[in-house]
Length: 214
Image (tube, rainbow, N blue to C red):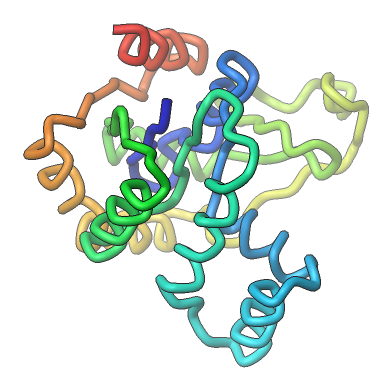
């Protein structure tokens, strides 16, 4: 099964992708992770990525598609989760062409729906463990009183510099301008499913499972 997770920054795409990896043996394809991995790989594609990033330029769609092609040609396990890609209609078309080329298909596009105001409150309270990346929230899942991550025992926690209200609202506007047209695109293809992402993490996890099982 191959799926796309759509949603604005902070909607929980990365968290839910990790659950799908655990629950269904799927492979998470995060654009950022793939670029970092490629940059350090020493392959021809990796050298291209390193050169572009060294110049401070944006990585082209062709390079990202090339990285995805490499992943699709490897171990498929339980299928792929596209997290953070596509972001534009042009990228969506390119991904469709690539999947057809590889004899694959897109099974579902899950839109994680959120309330913008609640999302701002959620994200500005967010912190992550520097050791394992476990996510905490001052309101819903505070850092333990002993200052230790219950998952790995680390005592250092980080907050993203752009996890503030002004930056988040700018990121939301960018999402709605560039990425939200994908919602109509995949709806027209009969691939779109909408999931309320404002509940507890396990509630959202169960809703996504219900969509995929159906």
